[in-house]
Image (cartoon, rainbow, N blue to C red; front, top):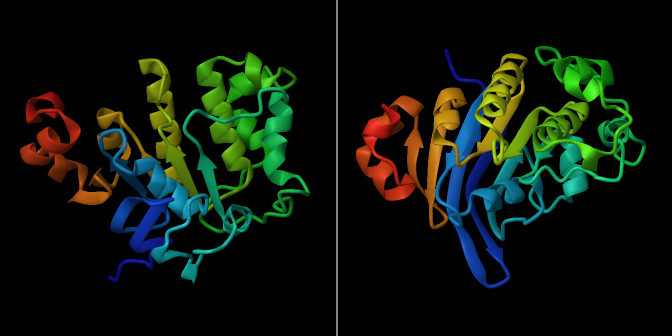
Length: 253
């Protein structure tokens, strides 16, 4: 049986910051109901890849296809409306707005997503559904976002993305700064999202988390992919683990 067409196809993209050449011809595919993780040391281009897909730092060359349609050159606003949401590094919630107001932003008239319709095979997110997923937010709906703990802010950032009912969620370091218990909760959330039909492009420093949730993994080094394969294949590749992630095979066994 033929594999379904990719939801996201990144083809030979080259991305710059001014004159700084950051991504050197990256290609990957991601299908609905799949998690693909991007691993690598700091400064290797992981976040730039997320920004390239989201339209925040568009590639100068190459193609990004979403649902078979090119999104290169489209504004981040239009890419969001097409069905891509981002959970940014550092959460980036609106600290002066309440939890309720943060969650309402993706469905506001300004966002243009207020009439998102249910999609067969994918969970449809409403405010009630998000609060059921994150009951701690339900208890703090009228609190300012800035008054939440780091873990609660991460839940809010994920919940805000879900309110847009995206087909694809870009997650940039969602476990950063969280306790082991909360990292486990993030893992559970990602598994649930995959099971409910969402696709996730995950950038992570937490190797154990990525190995646990990802269907496929790419390791990036100096703007190029040094490895692409399954979590099992990565754990058996001592050279990649040591050279590009700074861990030994024994540490991930």
